[in-house]
Length: 176
Image 1 (cartoon, rainbow, N blue to C red):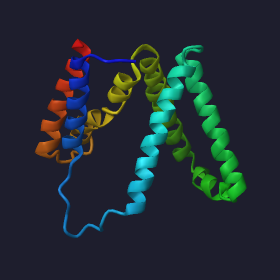
Image 2: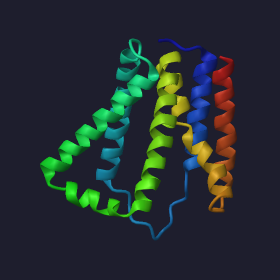
Image 3: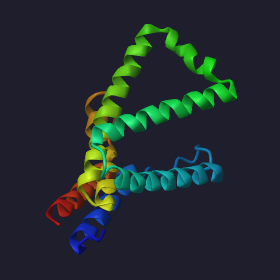
Image 4: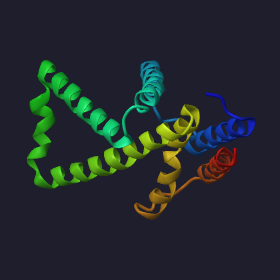
């Protein structure tokens, strides 16, 4: 897949805007960043990138909803196997004795799995991988107004400026 210079600039602006939005000045009382945490974060990004590319090749033959369902079932089976093998399943299930928690988790699963994952699969199916992945990574932009209005968190100036830069990048991607 190849992208135009306009789309490349849009991707760069979107990523720069997201970085600016998420940047937070370090507090002198915060613990140092763990090298181990950075390694796991980089490995997670690598796995997600490979996952998007594998999804792109596999989703050509099935619909986005079928791919999402298969992904969710595979995830549940893998986690269940890990819980059974490691002997941690009972501890994981203990909090679900509270009926209210079950409802909250089911709502979160419905919104995330069939809203977020399904729509991201639709994007991956119909866009270049780099464009779809950039758009999918812009989800923190949606959290900013929600955080400001629902729990009334204070939004920093760099988050607002970064959001505008990222949205400008998304506009360039759309125009490209």
